[in-house]
Length: 199
Image 1 (cartoon, rainbow, N blue to C red):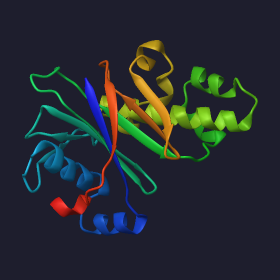
Image 2 (image 1 turned 180 degrees about the vertical axis):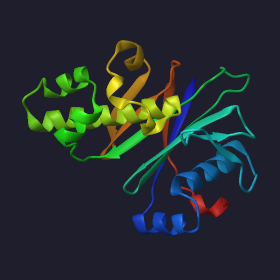
Image 3 (image 1 turned 120 degrees about the vertical axis):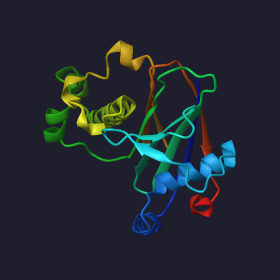
């Protein structure tokens, strides 16, 4: 499975203006990618929202995607599986570098995950591990289609069957995690088109 990750920096005030117009920067970026990369020229391809808020492109079921944003960074992970692998889904989460309070970790992390964070005594390393886990847990929840509605503390995303198809890396001062239950390769592309030009 080939996944493309398109990312773009969009100023916070621009994102706020987009929200006032009724749509997020992530959705606008998705629509622009669908037009420029896949030739889908519908002015507003119909996006259906699943039970827990996962967006689905119902007119083009061969295209699977997920959207994430943090600060001024907006990203779309997308794959086109023609003749496709059935029931394919992608979970993407990005987070700009920040601290995860211990109270939050104790509430949302599985005991084995928390033990891994505390395995090192270096506070900086603890925070790096904590943030990586947070993005992994969000990516896994978004892959499931449940977002943060799933019981985060019940799932240990460090288990080998989850880690085997989880990619986590630091890039552009953000932590990125991508999850799907298929083997995959990733290509990264900074998106330079204006995302509002095709809306």
